[in-house]
Amino acid sequence: MGVDLGAEAKRTALAVVQWQGREAWLTDVSTTADDDLILEVAAVADKVGIDCPLGWSDDFIEFVNAHHTGRVDRTPVDATARLPLRYRATDLDLIERNLGRPLSGSSDLIGVCAMRAAGLLAAMMKAGMEIDRSGVSGRVAETYPAAAVRHWGLGYASYKGTAKTAALGAMVDQLSHALPQLDLGDHEEICRDSDDAFDALMCALVARATTVYRGTTQIPSALIQRAKREGWIAVPSCHLFELLAPPEFE
Image (cartoon, rainbow, N blue to C red; front, side, top):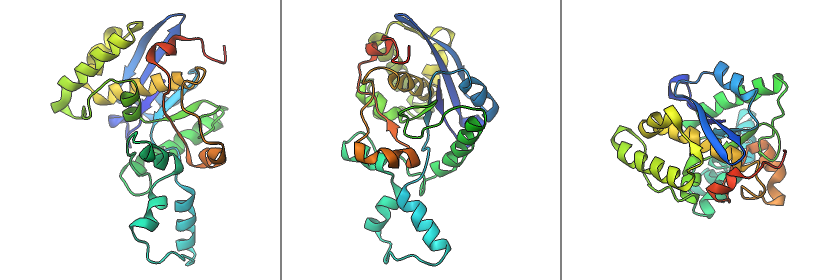
């Protein structure tokens, strides 16, 4: 299952991919997914890829707590001092590897989505689902479609917005060429028309990659505990056709 999480249901897309043997089907797509729908599908999904920060940086949390009690010792709080406040370890890792520049959960509007994600994770835990923000184990993994698109060579630097439907359609064509075993069925048109739906599909594919042997890049051992607090973006390291391999847990 993949979720392109917005602040509200009207900008939230959900995609479900079913895998069996050497075939896969896109079985469900919604572009107005509310919390109830996300939780309902997550309850039966093997893995849920969520395009949204699943936490905030340790430095940011410490800074906010220090400010709240009048103990800020960083002066001035200039661009250099703000960097670890804005970006988590996983964000800085992607930037360093030229895999993109994720939005900041503490200083960009995506922070509102991160608040929603925190509530969803809490609801999942209350429902008995194991949650590990690092994605190493448990039900969820944080995803970043832009990095997946780049790794899998699907192409276009810009495919967002109604004016980019031609680019989006070309990316769907490339996906179908690279992974012909994935049947988009009746949902192909919405994937061509909605970048939210396409991103949700990418999240579902990355979620699958986390279950395949060495399907995603490894978290540096020194950062694993931090990743469990801050969240960690799963970046695919496998080929698309390798998603058809049996998951590790089967």
